Amino acid sequence: MSMEMLRDVVKNVLSEVDVVIGYTEGFDKVHATPLFINTPEQVDRLIWSPICVHNLTTYLPSLKKKVGIIVKGCDSRTIVQYMQEGLINRENIKIIGIPCSGVISVKKLTKAVDYANIEDISFEKDGKINVTTDKGQKTLALTDVQPDKCRTCQYPTPVIYDHLIGDPISSDKPKESVYEDIVEFDKMTLEEKLNYWLKEFDRCIRCYACRNACPMCICQDSCIAETREPHWISQRLTTQEKLMFHMIHAVHLAGRCVECGECERVCPMGIPVNKLKRKINMDMKDLFDYEPGVNPDDKPPMYTFNVDELKIKEHKIG
Image 1 (cartoon, rainbow, N blue to C red):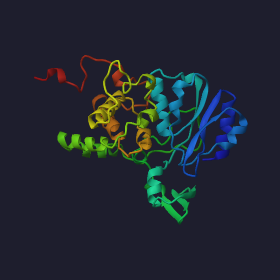
Image 2: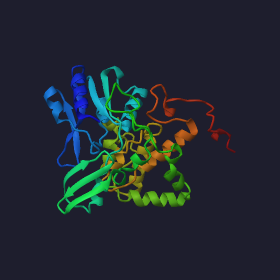
Image 3: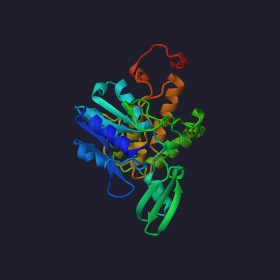
Image 4: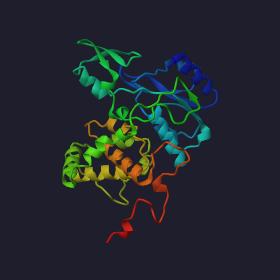
């Protein structure tokens, strides 16, 4: 992917919009941060590499202006989902898509270098990462430090775009492998599953980072986790209250989660919160043959109603 080409496209798009959202260097070499570009001079600050992990589309519903945005494949699915739900005006969005071979998990990377201070990092075309730390140099494989979402990604090339920077990439992951871990998890008994989640959520500190980073959590100003009318949950730090919050969060994303993995990335306690959403997505695929954020003309299952669903016969029970 040519940075020169990306910067040229951004400059051209900037003449059509009020702002272009991309990535720039963060506080160190392994963290990128969002860059809001208003002038051509800012374009030179743009970067693109596997450290560009954020899903920038989370800003779109609240920006009531014309916006250009740089997206990866998983990010682009959020835009499609926004379109399906009428949360954005497609005419006001210019999408700059970049085929993605995977991003890094900072948590996995720091663990791989034994938590040494990372002074520099570079990425080779063959998927190798050269890391310089205060303890020396180390070469890693990108696949070894990718977040779990990259291991099952079916859409490395954005599903929607106005400009595509670089050649399209096809997924080499079999579709049947996407939910292998969820199928295996489902073999546990209900009691085993409950005990698993109680143990995981006992570590939750109710920081709401998972909710705040989720691009589909669009009702944060009136989130049910904080409202007192109706009063569903309290602010008590009991495991039951934590479990209730995460279950509500997961159910509110039924048929909407695009599996961008932001919730899991930002969790300071390392809780596999994305597993809940992926379980629901697997059921959505099975029951309604629906995949969130893929086809702009689709209607999310929870936005429709049929008296007789083809694969749901609960009204005949008993």
